[in-house]
Structure formats: structure tokens, C-alpha cells
Image 1 (tube, rainbow, N blue to C red):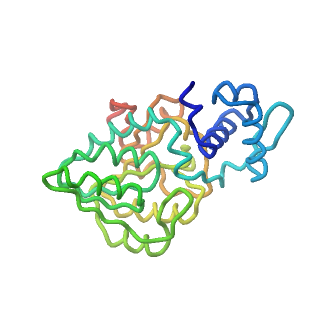
Image 2: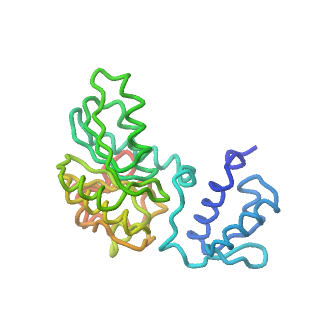
Length: 269
């Protein structure tokens, strides 16, 4: 039995959408092998995705319905994506943080991985608009001599479990943080870091303006994807941490302070 065969239906469907985004289409027989499930299960998944207007069914599979700019999968679904990549990125991110720092973490599953990597750093003050990330630090606080101080913004909850809106933005604008970690829906040299959610993009922009250092944590599947709204340009990034060399990362190195690939610094200006 494969690891993928243990996925819940929402997680499996999110992965199918990821394949459609990467390759433009998928075949039923390939998905049955990948996920270790029956043809009927895959066809039900495609029916559900087609019913939401996210894919178009064709003979033997499905193709893109060109919805990637506005697609916003839920937090649980995205947890299953690129786990090893997120852990490598998180380990590199944690190396940038020193005890006693004021750290901001935007919502997302990659920043959630960063939070788990930061739990051993003492005396942190953590600002986040993610309930999931706040819970990570609250659960480990009892095991540290000096537990972290956690500040959770208010706001309206999005499908990706971010708290956004005027309340979140106002709280963030009143703060000054040492280092900020942000994930994204997509990244290109032209559009920068993007999100499919306008509210989340606005809140992320507030984070960027409040941070002394801005760090993007982006796995290789996010390159060449454009969401609806830009919240940071490459020139605003002090670090961009990714898990794999891609052609686009070479061009990005000319505009980002430092590009870090997994555990090593790719470029130092």
C-alpha cells in the first residue's frame, strides 16, 4: 500500500489539481497507479472537481479549466503537498533566526513547517495571522525555559486558514518585527509573490511593510504560477528559500538579497 493511498478525498483532489496545473491535464490510469485507488474513485474525484469548475473532463482524464489564478485549496489539502521540500525549506529558514527575535509568520503550510522548525529557538516573540501556527508555539511553550510570546491577529478566516481583513492589517501595521516568513500561491519574476485571495494579499503586504527582513519560503512547484494579486516583489525580499534549482531562480538571484536552495546559500551579493 502506497503512502498516497492513505490520503483523504480532499487531499487527493488537491493533488490532482496540482498535477493538472503542472502538466495541463491528467489521465485516469496514471492517477490510479499514483494514488493506489480504483478507476471509480478517480472518476468520482474528477467529477467533483469538474462540478466545481476546476477541471474539464475529457475521454480518459481531465484537462485544466484555467482556474489557477483564483484556486484556493484548503489548509488540510495543502498539507499533503511537497512535504519533504517544506521540511528542507523550514530547516534553512530556522537557521536565520536567533534567540530573542521578533518573528512574523504569514499563514500557509510552508510557514507552518517553518513554525515547527522554530520551536527549539528560545525567547521568541511570534506574530502570526494563522491559528494553526499559533497552536504550534502554544503546544511547545511548556517545554522551554522561556516559552515564546505569541501574538495572533484578529480577522476573517480564509479557506487556507489565514486571518485577514482590516482588523488583521491594523494590528500588523502597529508592529515592528525582526524577520518575516511568507509563503505564496505562486512566484514569477514579473509578478513577484502572489495569492488568489485579495484579503490575504493585503494582509501580507502589511506584514512586508512591518518587517526589517522579508523571507519568502517557496517550493519548486510555485515557480511560474501567478495568483490573482501581488503582495511582494522580488526586490522586496531579503531571502528567497526554495528546495530545488529551477531556471527561473537564476534570474531571481539578480533581484533578491540572497537565494537559498535547501540547506545552502545560492548567492551572496
